Image (cartoon, rainbow, N blue to C red):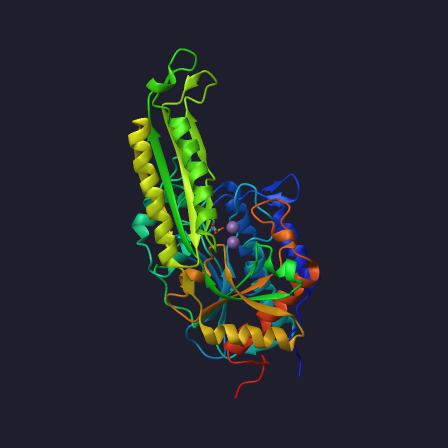
Length: 417
Ligand code: HGY
Ligand code: MN
Ligand code: MN
């Protein structure tokens, strides 16, 4: 009985080839969503999908799905992730899950095997949210969590709209959204944190994704001369911004547990050495595995902004960029991943995901779970992101086993009952 075998080298070649698209120094890549580099990456992956015999569809928000027919019609067992990256992206974040899905298809093709139910490999638009917020935008629209016109109207940090950029790169596709729900969804992803690497494990069985709260804060004060303006007379937007940066760090330390807080983007105006800033724009990213504690963190931040308005007499406005409650994955799917990983002799543990993923959106419409492989030193969103070849291959082998079982098993393609 022919069997399907993952070819780790072939998978690594595809990871390397995709990493060349938007390549930056240090071995990483910059393919911000809907940029020219994203278009080039999309074109490359769609070409591979067609070479593998997949029927490729593009939907109205630019999500791409490659479909491999099963012996019966109906909803597909889907895997996938994203191929857009942050500006300092590694080569594995998102890309690995999509290309491992293609490797599963290649292994089945090579083995001359068919599955009962169709298989699909997808990449979703703008998972990162670095250019356009919220993150997981494409999968959110795919699963009906956000209306298409609201998504298309979203403006990015550079003032461009999703709709205009999608059309510009030629990926405003005909397939309708929201899509019909897949039969199941499994996402393979690098952990992006230090847990599996530190514990010397091979596979993470991801049971949940933590809650995410992104807020953009605009502070307006008075620009003034740095040398002549007495401290008591200042309305210093820069100082207020600094106070927020300090506050969120102390808040995360005080709340402890899983609470994390990040000010990742900040701009001063006029941003000159001898002018008290009259305007500051910054983002706060708060996350927690517990929804109640995330709400407490948000309330504490709001109270700090009120105190700043009084203390510095600045105006402060906020804009919610993303807000997702924690998501739990399907327990039976988690069991399935754990069983197959252990049957392959791999060391596993169950864990939450610190990062957001498209799977958290698919979980709303079908049985969903995730497989993690270790990130060396837990580094990610950094060109030094790295996962050992043995783990790249092992993750794909677990994915192959889980997907084919979910798809009703394999048979030699020629045979039909
Ligand atoms: O922000 C995140 O967790 C993901 O990388 N979009
Ligand atoms: Mn990712
Ligand atoms: Mn990411």
